[in-house]
Image 1: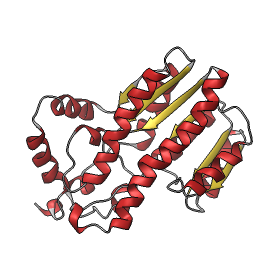
Image 2: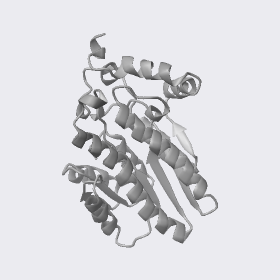
Image 3: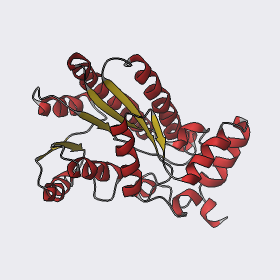
Length: 250
């Protein structure tokens, strides 16, 4: 979790609203983020853990130490650009294990505790990328389609239990995501993006209201509306123009 990322801004929203924090990331910068968040006057515990692995989830869940979790914000995510056949499969697997497998493991463990208590809030970060075939971002978009669908299904399963599930669906956001995904030669990688603080505030507010989902930004709302109307082949071609390597120069 790095300052300026959606996860950090979500943690800041929680801190500003009186939540004690247990935060995790697979990099040591999490300690600096924790120090920053303690400026809000609340307790913050940081865990360095790779949430793409069972060991990382075990480490984070052990740090809960049986304490009741009022809100779980499952935001860990990883992207990957370029054509699927040109990607290293170890990197492909890491995207799936981070975005899907690790998220499911954590949500199931914390969700069971919440259901047993009869209260809790779960926020899962999906994406508007899950609404369309993501040419040259196919694995990432596929994981987000899964999370979008999973969030709605889990929400229905947990109705009347006191546990709410909200799906945050941002569009392209101003973080290091596209640089880390090796997409800085693409149109989507270089175009203006949304402010992560605005995205986080919308997601946090929706979670606190118990909403089923929130799409942030009017352009993203328009894009999801269009995605529900156009055939998949047209959406795939549209995404190609945004994410194909070299499209930044087109």
